[in-house]
Amino acid sequence: MVFGKTEEMDFQNLSTLSFILVLVIATSTIALADDSFLVESFSNSELTENNPLFSVQGHIEDISWVKNVSTDGVIEITGITFSIVNDDQFPHLFEICAVIEGPSGNFTPSPDSDPSCTLSEAIGGNGMIRNQTINFSNGIKVSDIKDLSILIQEL
Image 1 (cartoon, helix red, strand yellow):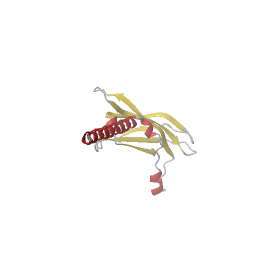
Image 2 (image 1 turned 120 degrees about the vertical axis):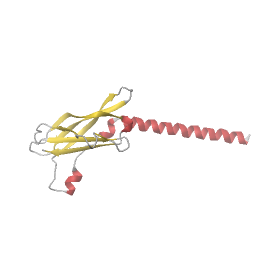
Image 3 (image 1 turned 180 degrees about the vertical axis):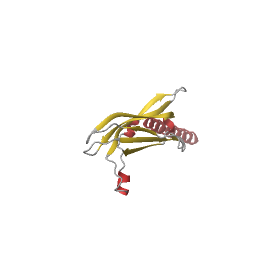
Image 4 (image 1 turned 180 degrees about the horizontal axis):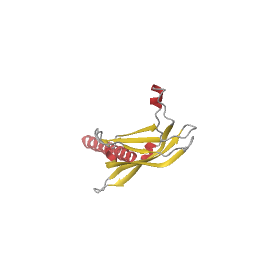
C-alpha cells in the first residue's frame, strides 16, 4: 500500500506541476498579445545624456499595436500607432522610425530595405499630435516579437 500511495502522490505532484506550467505559458502568451506592456513613454534621454549637443525636444507616448489576422488565422502586427509630444516651447517637426525584432534576430523592416518611418506636421510649443501610424511592409506574428525599437528625430 505504501508503494501505491507514493505513485499517487507523484502523479498529483506531476499534475500540479503540469497545471502550473500551462498556466505560466498561457499567461505569458496573453501578456505578449496584450499591448499594455507598451504604455511607457519613449525618449532619447540616453542620447542626450551622452551628447549634450544632440537634444531632441520631443518624445513618443501611447504606443499600441496595429493587429490583423493573417491568411493562416494567426494574429500579426502590421504597424504601430502613437502620439508625438513636443517638449519645447517652440514648434518642431519630427521624424519617427520603428523596427521590430523577431523571430530570432530577424528585423522588420530588414536591414537592407528602407526604414519604416513617418514625418509629423509642425507641432506647436508643448503640443501633441495623436494617432500617428507607422505601417510595416510585412506582418509579424505576435508570438515572434522580441523587441520594438523607436527613434525620434527633430527636423
